Image 1 (cartoon, rainbow, N blue to C red):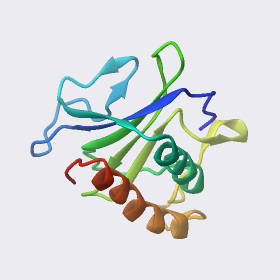
Image 2: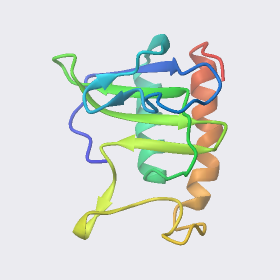
Image 3: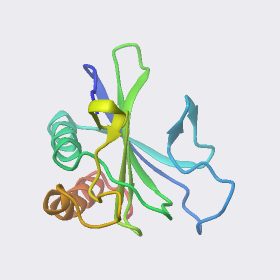
Image 4: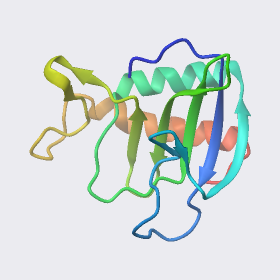
Length: 142
């Protein structure tokens, strides 16, 4: 996630209903915000730095059946979204945007192409409770 300089971060809850087909899964996809945003909270600077640290430690992941209900969105000084991480506590998955990539556009993830635990598994297991803690500190439900 080559995140350009950010000015502030907001936390969101969204999709607070049972998983459904034909619902936008991420808080922000191709410049379009989810129609199902429930809450929005400004994240303190130290908490935002922790989110950046967590995203960088895990480098994202992939899932066959995600339905995230939480997200952090990074904004530049012009109030434009420049990055995000959607969190699914049900399926234990993280979805950063922009994607982490290595040479030849191959995506990083906690699973390898065969679905086995990959290089960032230990960091990932530590990150989910840390994300949950930040959402709780902000008064947002899990």
